[in-house]
Image 1 (tube, rainbow, N blue to C red):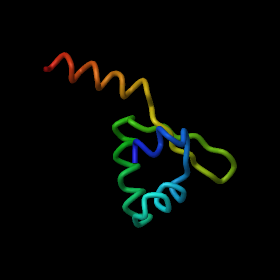
Image 2: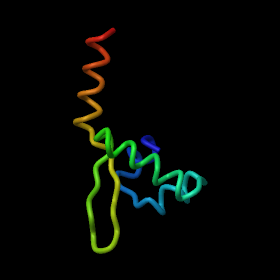
Image 3: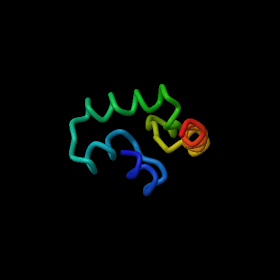
Length: 69
């Protein structure tokens, strides 16, 4: 899911589950977890919510992992 978002820059939940061939509920649950961890960001355009990778958070996590290693 993260790789897809990185490649496409921003997608709706519908675009994500269609491209990954998973159930909508599964995509939504995963996105909720990633959103809570601040790994993905959301932006609204009209009635659509777009998801994108939060690169700052990815970098923070990467630094933390390197510090622990």
